[in-house]
Figure 1 (cartoon, rainbow, N blue to C red):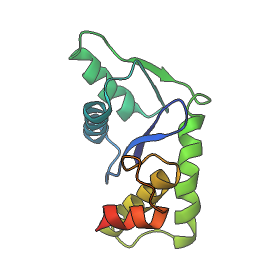
Figure 2: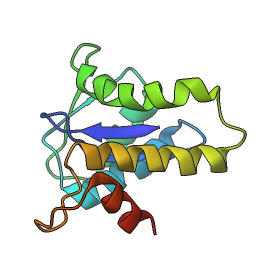
Figure 3: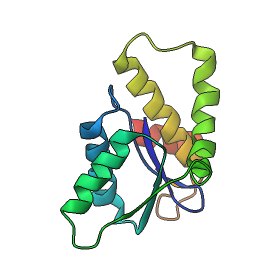
Figure 4: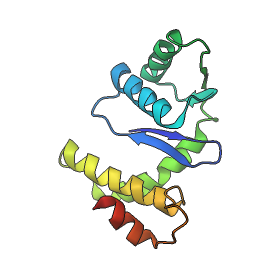
Length: 136
């Protein structure tokens, strides 16, 4: 699972892929940048796939994205991911990738709604009503 979190800890974007390779990382970074704009700095873990994908993206750009690989700076992402781990650990895994994709997308959506990331033009909906309106 790939996820992007801003400085305040708000989930920016997420993507679930079957393999964690350069192609998946490049697709994720491209999708995230297209939806949310180009960041000045990206903090990643020690994954070689993430580094290779960002190096490939930087080769195509005039102003490169600064890459930081630091275990302690990545803690904001891990704290955001903790809510997903808490929900999926009792499930003891998933039967197939399709089920994992569906369940994790719903959990991520509900987590983003609870954090107030999915505001609907000032209309006050309960969290469950907002979830059902987006899921239906």
